[in-house]
Image (cartoon, rainbow, N blue to C red; front, side, top):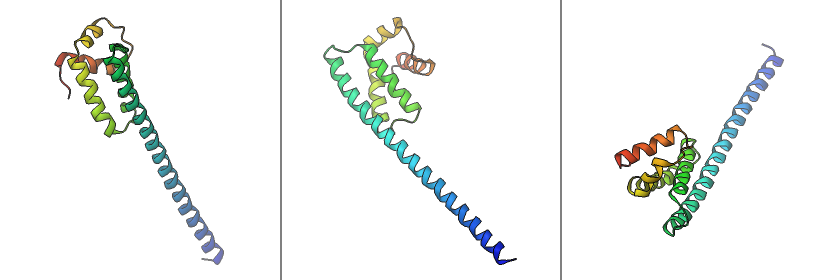
Length: 133
């Protein structure tokens, strides 16, 4: 083996190590960006949910508004855009609303449904069972 070959091999190894380092760094950066997005979405949904709860209680929001919000929460969760620490209690609250508020059942029977099959099936299941898993 010549000195040139040895140096060439060393440079190739150094380049490989640098590439691996760059890929790891990019992965960590993407992971932090995704986490930042989930935190932002979670905060936004908590604020919207609090306002919607007040508006519903005061008669300014209707069942359809609450279900549209629940659909948004469900979509964010299914697409990993929401922190579990926020989704779990928010989902429990929304599910309890669907299961216990008689206005939901009345609305759902006649509503135009445009939410998508998964969400509609979930609401149907909650209304039939009156339970939250």
